[in-house]
Image (cartoon, rainbow, N blue to C red; front, side, top):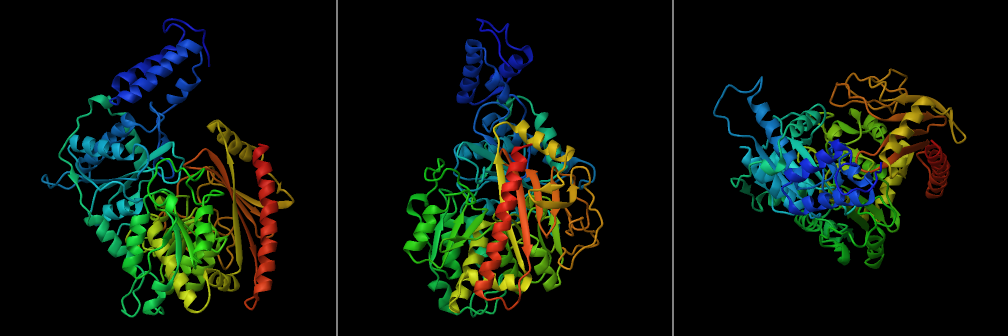
Length: 622
């Protein structure tokens, strides 16, 4: 859109100009008002309205992991006005729920309690303060954790304090130019959603409440909020450390490290990076309390830095992000290399230069948890089928959900483990009803210590699991776009003209979760996920949102391929990407030696690479 330069507003589309002026007048943050005013002036000077249109293209909406967007003025960015209106909308929703149908007849109920945390990103502390002040001004009890804090500590606080809701200001592993806003809800004890992130229809209800909020500059701000001390963090450290069963104590933790001698944990050498985030102090405290030595930490990445200066993207999955910690691991002869993302809810692991995939770590952790506490497990539709095979062997139910931990955590009230391939793991769901990179790191270290005692590594344990359950090799193809409309166009094309082949591989079945959200009954192999009365998808996997409930439709297309392969395509819920999740399976003899396993992995890797190239070309050509 463009216009002829003019000295007044006559050439600007009236609706856009009126909206921009109204937002500027209502914005409580002077730098953001100045930023938008400059954009309006630039539109006059150049006739180019593209940037202004982008800023007013629509409000941020809750996605896979809350609100997330670039730090910029206007409704389509993370800024003071958006944060204050979001906090006001959440307060209004909580108060309405408390007073609405089905509410307690007790008129003396205390106001809803919301606990707030923030990471160390640009604007995070300010946005957290904005939130508690708006909440207090609306008559809601608000409590602020010491800033910065890892996301798992905030999720822990929701359950620990019996809060009605929690807010975490973070954009997790997004670029430095972004920030975000996660919302958690409390629930009665025993409810699987207690302390989990919001899902539909609550997310749209809160969005409607946000849309109904008046001008941000007019929102009342209160000073009656609580500034919490270190007690929540201290309690989290103690509880997280206790998930690793202390050697020789006979107590029961979440993990099966009971054969460790007292010195085994202390002898483990761990190289670690928080990737310029907030995880280092908490992880070190948990490790040392559990009996591990403090990890060797990448010095230049040890302290929080919102610019993430040593990495292109602060995501452990991105190429190059782990280069420094891998180098440190070699330098200190580490037994295991561990990385958290900046808000410490994700965890990556490596042995030597071999970086484990999220599915491999998920299998290792699931095996460890199920050895100690057999019970229901859950993963997502884009993760490996290996968890279902493991669950069948342990005779426990396995649930598959839509992508995102908000769904995994609702799979079953008695869930003992959940994971997603994007490096998210819940080894102690009763502690934190979300992915937790700190307890996952502790569990990985515990497994590594147990294996080291016998002269082995995590890779040896993984080989054992492959011999037992077969090789499930996975990979991901991501196509980053600059125009979000491109994502919709690709997904629409996939549905309009679905392929009969991807590369040289025949497509046996297509399942579109947007048009057929109800699982279709089909023959389920022995390794299919076991669910409570849930039928299987056409590819043999099961899908559920909460135990026994149907999940909503989703913008996901699943292709089941000849030869045991699978491709799942969906838009990213947090970044401007189209993602394809690839899986190939190869049977393995229980007596396979190291050379045979290496050949099997090479075969699977070749198949994945060929499939990945075909998928990438397939998506780019749409």
